[in-house]
Image (cartoon, rainbow, N blue to C red; front, side):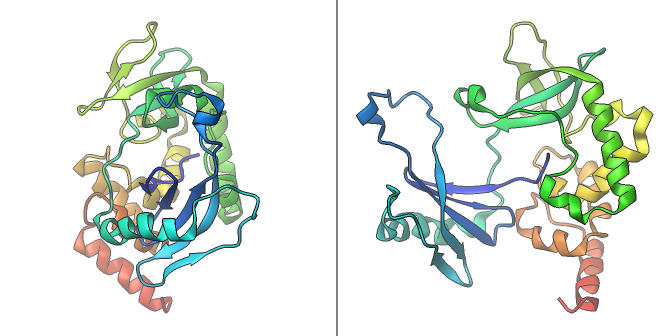
Length: 271
């Protein structure tokens, strides 16, 4: 399920993740030393990360209790390396997207990209990508849905999964052309949204409901053209709290009229 883009600041031993550019989750690597296992440093090995603490520019860094048996970087190392970088870099969000390798569910008849299943930043990560059937929303968000939204999203989910029988990996270029990574595929334009809106004539309303509900998160995509960004901004003003939270990670500034509408809504809510 699409949950928005993630900002990442990392070094060799730890990383910081943020969905809004303000609040950062610090994670520490507790991988086994590669050289002890005679693993080539060129080979991509998925790391295991554990939650180490939290950081924000206003509140600073706060650590969390850790299992003493874990082999993780020292607090001094995290503060002297990662935290210093964060103080210098956090205000530069959004960072340029680097996950240009995308896996798309293909329509069973036209073989055109139908729905985005996942993305990675290096081809070496593709064999480790966890792919499953397309989901409309993250499971932890389902409780926020109203009954009619749940029904709509379930229909959309069923439509996509029943009309896609295979998937393919592409590299998105600067013109949004998908360059195939498998020899049996051909280059073709990739959608700018995680769904191909040209292929939902049979469930237009369900598609629109999904785009409207996720518009604050979809606005974080750097694949949007000006027209699509403006369309999503109009929808996102109906989700004032979540949209305001993500203002620092939008690739463009929202129109002033929409920003004013959001500010009025927040003021009415006392936020």
